[in-house]
Length: 330
Image (cartoon, rainbow, N blue to C red; front, side, top):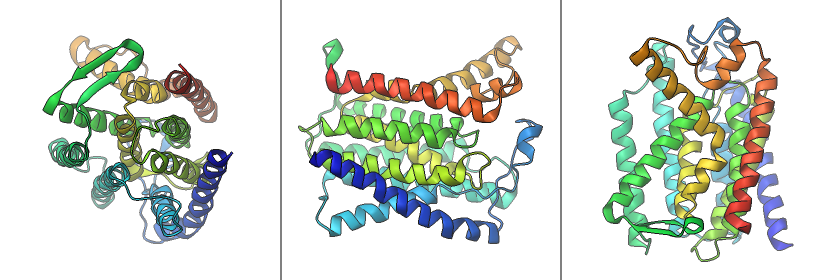
């Protein structure tokens, strides 16, 4: 019962702080004309969204950090190396996304930071992650219990960290194309990882990781009040990059890297659809999808935006429940 009480408290705290932050922040974003630039490639239905306030990721990033601070002051959580890694990645990717968003707003395009610059920064983040992880007794093994795999990776485990951080952050970023889509899927993913984290009693700071998951899930639910169709604010790269990287971090810390692919299954499918489209066009000069990523394909064939989001949420929830069954029960 105590676990359920802590879970409910964390979600409620994140939600309330997120609502308050949104009510304060959105007018400020409007006042300073921090609006989204929409590419004409996406389609006419999205052009009317141009100018909608962006950098809305602050609506769940700020409340999450405030909630953790309040819980620490109250003695409800402790500072562990796992929590330090988690917060470090969360803030670092938010900062990277903030700079990317700022450049897009300043120059009124979708270019932002160069790919090389982004990769360099993400390599530094992964190196610091790897150093803190190994310095506190972390094992550089790839463990998949269900398949009986325990593969020692040594320093190449750092490359796995980099791959998962880059892949997951960009997957959420690619999925963030419809009102409420990425936010809702991320909330589901964090709830799933929160449940899985409660079951990793062998991990130092497992309780803090679980509470973090539920706090940010609650904050995301608050964010959806403002981001659901019609969106009053977009999360921007600031939000999507931090969400994806944080999900990958939790998967690595709890040694549920395989579960990440299942919990974030929709993110994976969205990314693959974009990759397949790029390869098909460049190599064969043909399109597999009418438009990529996949949610835009369904838009072009005539599905309503709200329906696409709902269907994707349901699919994401089913995948998350399957991952919980695999990660906790089996």
